[in-house]
Each structure stands twice: as C-alpha cells, then as structure tokens.
Image 1 (cartoon, helix red, strand yellow):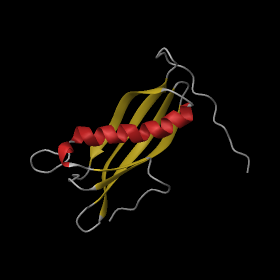
Image 2 (tube, one colour):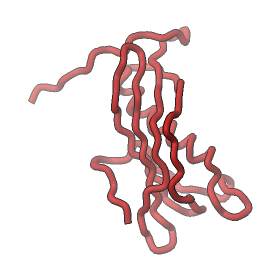
Image 3 (tube, rainbow, N blue to C red):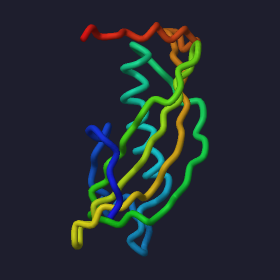
Image 4 (cartoon, rainbow, N blue to C red):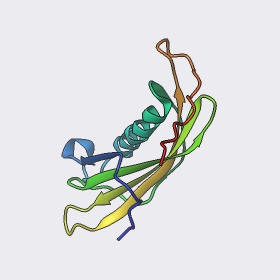
Amino acid sequence: MSELPPGQPALRTVAMPADANPNGDIFGGWLLSQMDLAGSVVAYERAGGRIATIAIDAMTFLKPVYVGDLVSCYAEIIRVGTTSIRVKVETFARRREGGTVIKVTEGIVTYVAIDEKGQKRPVPPAIVEPR
C-alpha cells in the first residue's frame, strides 16, 4: 500500500469502461489528461486566472489503472517563475477489488499564465496569509 501525500487530492474520479482498452487497462492518455486537470486546479488558483499547459516532464507510469479504480491526483506547486508554474502531480488508485491504494503515476506539468488574448502574463506575487 502506498502512502498518500498530505492534504486533499486536487481531483478524484472513477476509471470507466469507455476509458479502457480491450484488456481492461485504462488508456495512458486518459490518465495523463486527469493529471493535467489536477495540476491545472492549483496552477489556476496560484496564477489568479487563465493558464495553459506548455509542458509535461518526467512522466512515469508506475502501475496500470483498471476499470472501477478510484483515481486520486495530488498536485503540489514546486516552482513559480515570472510567467510559469511547475506542478508535481502524483496519482494513486484505490483498487475496486480489495481497496488497496497504490501510486500509479507521477509527473511534472508546467503551465503558463495567460491573459484574455491568450498571451503570456506575469504570475502575481504570492499572497501570504497572516497567522
């Protein structure tokens, strides 16, 4: 059983038959799109508005995902640049049969903050909440 990261997942969904190949394994592209969505949740909040995916780095498929698995993606910002935000995304599957939780993928997604015309814009400074 894998240890989950702290906090709540940025995205949770159930892998469905339409997302699988004839062997019942979930397509890697579907899983990658879930990771992109999860990363975009935290990137959008940090950017304070629109973002666009510009790169997916170090993507690793560790274990297969099966129909019926509960897929949870955890996203953490690891770097904020002038216009870009890098997010580490780790994905876990809770097996439908037995309930075992295992890490199935990990990767780093880079987003760029964009304006209403789709042009790069600066990421605003971080807001530090008073304690």
